[in-house]
Length: 101
Image (cartoon, rainbow, N blue to C red; front, side, top):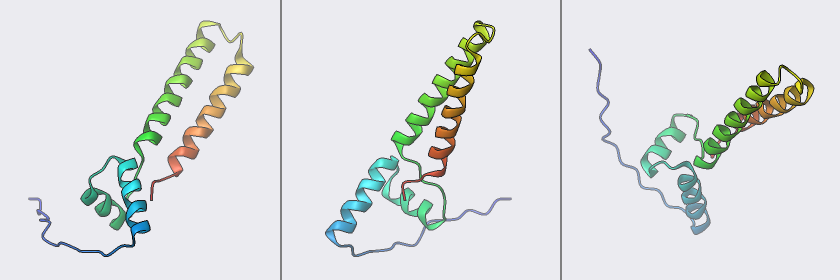
């Protein structure tokens, strides 16, 4: 049997105009609701921006295409494709370590 955790606590926070604008920017970039953003931040959970997720997906797509070129050419461009795939992997790894907060 699972225990339900009802959300019963409400917090009110005073922010400066700059703090408020910064918080809204981060929330909008994440694509989350204000509540979900705060919950993730409070629980030290990763917050990823929508743009970051799209870039990672596109890099993975390009990596797949390079792998396809490598396989279809029987490795004719192996040094070039290997180098490009390595760079894509490093970029994805770097982006995966970033967060909005």
